[in-house]
Length: 273
Image (cartoon, rainbow, N blue to C red; front, side, top):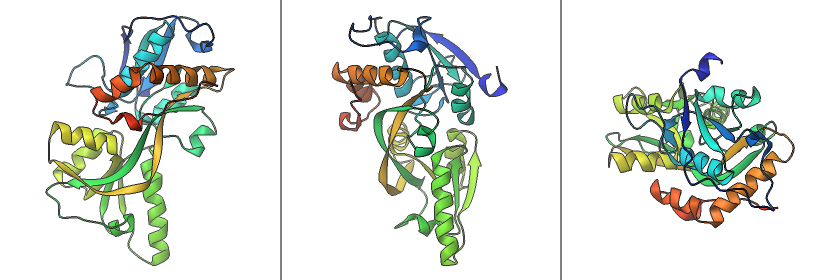
């Protein structure tokens, strides 16, 4: 097991009562051993995180989704915690059956890994509520220091903004990268970064936990979709799509969304064909 996968390996009980897969629905090949192993980076609340220091098992929307998928397939769930940059390589290496970790679908990712979307989300720029920083568009971050998690699509967004600033002859954004989203948050809180980039889901959770601590100063116009990533093997993608659709139809996804404060309309039904 590589060093990036030594953080924790947790075997958990199935989230919901184990149910056999419907006769007309094929099970994915990776649960042949009656286990569903999921890789995740547990630093991105409320999608996946450790509630307290020393906790053995992460919690969050994605953890509940992973356990519900396992239950749908009549399998036990197993959560493998890794740094974000090691997630998809770990899938490639067979350390897990799927990656569920608040990772948006992008053309680059889908070229290598099939992704089954389950939640619509938007990218935001935020800062401390104590800051007087205000922007009309991302180019207004010229000359500012912005923190971002390494290996995420947020970094590519900021790099594109810097390309536009270079064409304008303006000062670039000073981009600071950190291995964990919790590190990014900390830089904003202590004032080492003027702003940071994350998902609207995380900001909603942070402000639910500590009202008024952060403020959103820009929301990117495009939305993205969090997805379950699997290997391109046989009918595994189709089987995962069918399972997500079934959890949507029977209300399980809506229940999970309500638990973590997300509107049900942000859920993506999935496909059954």
